[in-house]
Image (cartoon, rainbow, N blue to C red):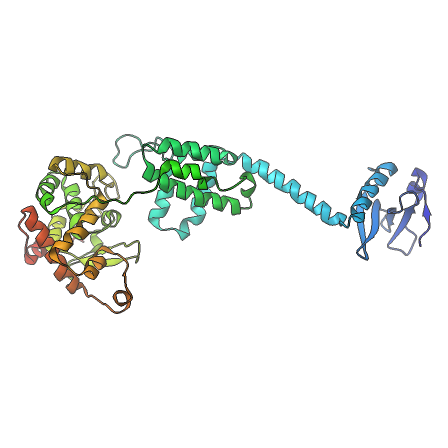
Length: 432
């Protein structure tokens, strides 16, 4: 056992490391766990030393120049109390350090605007998302005042902007529920989509080392009150009936030529509205009479180019790479939702949305008794059976046979003379 002496200021000042040793200890008799350590380099420090689980635990308390003897004894007693409880002071110090760092991170994250974090989130996840999914995140969180695509006026703020334009720590359940209550009456469908996007975003924040400390409690977007306020989505059943085709086509053909062609082609192809909007002239194959669509399920699908749709495309001006362009922007036309509803008002038929025209195509094929698998392949639906998925291969010419039959029947009901395939070929030419 080393000799213990009562530490005094004089003994602390006089104590040095003997020659030939790396370090030496002067142990206190009043607090046995306290010692003064001196090194060969001349450095001194108060240290705490004790046994825990048969192992030596040594913790540096501090330099005698900064610690009085009584302060060092008090600290040694605190550390001894931890050891008596079976707690390693080093682990306790590390835990407290982590708590301080977490609190500091929480304070920093609390000041970050949720909108800035949203943009960082979108950029990080962009490679894993599809183009449309990324566009949804940007559109629904856009700030007010951005110029409209047609150059007329300014766009309103996205639904999520008011919710995200606040410190991240304030993005809590109360804020989300209040936001949901405001949007429940005016646009519940869009709000439900925004709530789902927000839920995934908050999960990302809770897993992010820089932002997880700013959020407390459960995911605010999972609030039961918010979901109940927005309600459950209702299945849509808007579609054109056979007797409504004639007035609808008459009204559609009175619109702007590009809008008119788009609406008619949407009904006659059964494509998704976004797929047809992004159709480019490079996707129109005159040799094989086909259209290549960017399919959200398969990535890409090829459907027949029927005679009447070919005639519609032939009449359109070539303003750029996209088939349906307005001439005011470098991209395709904006989704003509309002024009589609205006056509229905003019025709005196119940409102049919753009997706309702796709639904109409599927419904009208029942009159022609087209095989269900053919319709599903043209529309881009997933195969519904093993035989359909793995054993049925339909070439384009087989699809074209049925698709032309569907188009001819719809045009007959609309009172429109169906063009011949040769007439369409002569009018539609490749433009380099």
